[in-house]
Length: 252
Image 1 (tube, helix red, strand yellow):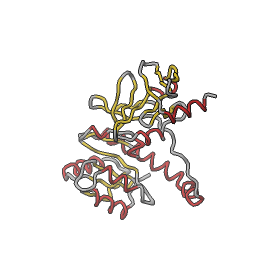
Image 2 (tube, helix red, strand yellow):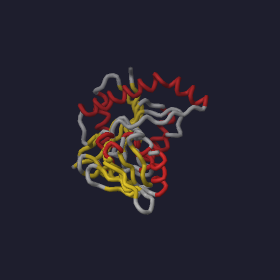
Image 3 (cartoon, rainbow, N blue to C red):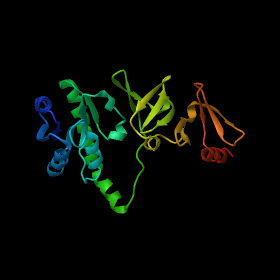
Image 4 (spheres, rainbow, N blue to C red):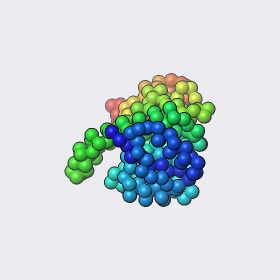
């Protein structure tokens, strides 16, 4: 199938480079460009492109803010993020993007991204009628559990499977994902991430702590009625009183 593509970047040279790379893909049609977030939203509404290549750092609305506002659109394009800053490598569910290109990227990497976007668009087309019917009927399905969490490690983006995660700790607007013997900081709230991880084995034991029961060695009751969660890696997490009561009810 042919894909219509919108390029969004505040740097003219970056747009020119992306135009040249996209021109090498015969089944891609470049339908427009935008130099900032507000213009991107206007062009998406006007052109209804299949795919948007979206820079993250832009004046005015950032690429992340554009994604947030796209949720109000009836038809949402597949999004491929482009950026020169690897600290924006966050979970796929948070960004709702099909790929994440770190500048500078070449023709082979772009081709892989556009192929992934094509598959996403085709999949959406196949289920669009069913989704609209569910919307009319007021049915809402929970988001599918994450197949992986993307973290940043020494400048690279690394996928971590949920079963590798020992525990997750909230740190303001970030979370620390403990896996593979170390911690990875990612930009997402604990509540959002908890909603996309399979339950079980993941259990919220505190407003700031989520543990993977497959990595829990034991839960010991304390004098104050709370449970101390001991994990196989030697770490410990104090459950809240409310969560301890829930654990107690479930263990009866």
